[in-house]
Image (cartoon, rainbow over all chains, first blue to last red; front, side, top):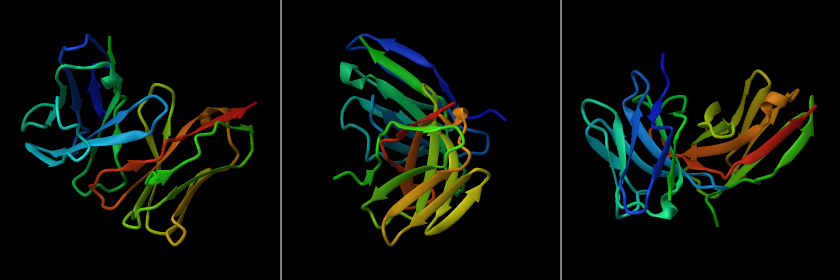
Length: 114
Length: 111
């Protein structure tokens, strides 16, 4: 039973490019969450999605960031025109419909903007 | 003031010691409390999950929640070098809601 799969593990982008981060939830999990972890800081909530719906995007920056969880395929976190301050570890987590027993996190994508 | 406060450490203890990790919070709506362990350059791994006040034990780990004081604790008995990691507390108001994390406490268990 594979866990939450995130790819790529490492991503390097030049300033102004686009970054696409992918997340496949655990089998049977229909809720996906994205978190960002900056150096020396805790994880910060970004967005909560169910299939084809954004439920809570209160943690998403207003510009350049978007997320989707289509009917088929992984969830995608997209960052347009990346800046140095976007460099961070981005973690995806998934949970069952009831959210029981907490989330399961993936291993993260480490984005470096040069 | 942050919603969740956690001492970043580092906390260094000898092997076999009892470790106490703590978080305080300000949002009285939080009802679900979790502890995660995160090894360097890895994703957080769920250790303990507690609803409302009380104690929960799982092997060497005990989680305590005191909602009246807005204070949660994680105790690790007979600590091992493999317990060396960053421990993150997290909490939410609902089961399928966003988590609010503490900044994490770095623990080092020495031989």
